[in-house]
Image: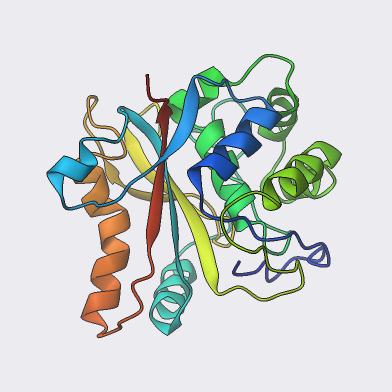
Length: 250
């Protein structure tokens, strides 16, 4: 996926993950997220009947989209206005991971989804994910990135997930022009866009106490904004895909 520019450790690369609910769910379960949570496909963000089949509440949305000129121009302009994020510690509203491993944006995305908001309470005690998160919370972003880079547990779980899915997995060295971002709701009812390529977590707006990340308000502030930018720029590359993290189907 879109890379990890600016990292002194960008030599490590993973096989890209397929945006498949079963693949992403198996990876998180192997790391230690409770099996009561899983990813589900979101087939439409406009059709009420299709939205209605997605288990609610939705704790995180994982969006995959093409990295094109429209997006890159927007990203660089928005990042120019902010400083590098240095948050850490127990008082952090959301925990953000900088991506320093090539093609690991899918992994970073699901870590953001599992580590923030209501999902964090579903991490099994003493699991690999629990241990990793407890270490990461105390570290600033650069040290956090090193923690992920050096984690044997993450690399092993990622390798196991990368061979699953319905499509042929590209080589780790292959450049893939698709990228993952994650949308999460904080305990303060704020919607954040979480992307390891950016300078830190991005506050996209306020949600009501009863609104999840698949609510109309969250969709307007999050995924629909990507589509609006592409349409307004006259682009035709709308290869967007979305999965939701929440309670599994009964």
